[in-house]
Length: 302
Image (cartoon, rainbow, N blue to C red; front, side, top):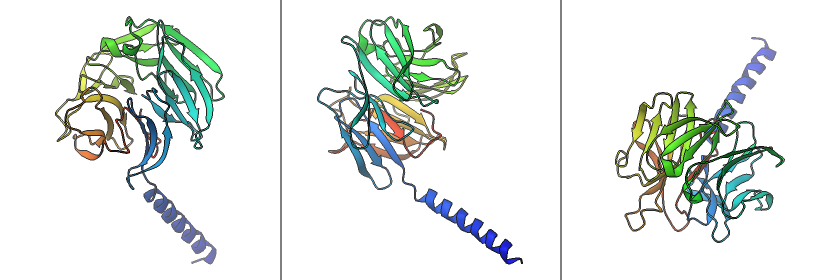
């Protein structure tokens, strides 16, 4: 065989081995935070250790945390939203006006900053990566108490917005003028809604103690995981849920409304057959979890 050709083939083999080794050695890390917990944490699931943590100020309530495209941390803290660097320096901040709550802060598929604010009226803000306001959408939830209005807001690939209306047991789809395109009754206290496909939403239903997959066009229930469906882990308040690229699901099992009951896992990964792959329990270093960002899985749906 030609030496030049053999060398080239050997280089290809070595490259493939190196890539495979690199992938197998890539630890699974998650960003987690939760209402009632005074930290945001980056946690290594494989080594079972905290690799980074950010202390929240007294009285702050974090119900959502995300990584920006360049690796900084975006989070909501009830009275506003922040982006901080790994050195904890504040890179961007939004202060929510008095009488409102900022419960949702995420990154859109375009890399923009998306905020959801409870108030009269409720508002959705979209900022570019430099922090300049691109869009403001106002709408009336019909819920007077700001704390009972909404949590996670998500932008779909079509440019519409999914808004779980906390106090109405509904998920609304809005256009960028604030018009309601759909109202889907899901029951419970909906915390987050993900569009898996145009005819398939996954909705975390909070104190309803279930995770629902539903066709928003027909209201047909595709799948429902109820309180006692997962072995040895009863569902408490079902907060953020994420569909991993493997087909498994992460469920934030927030326990703040059931204090005094037996402690159960506050975050878990389950298979489509509802088998637990791993779970995290409350400890001295890990608090209640209502938001999770799987750092290792760039193709997840959240």
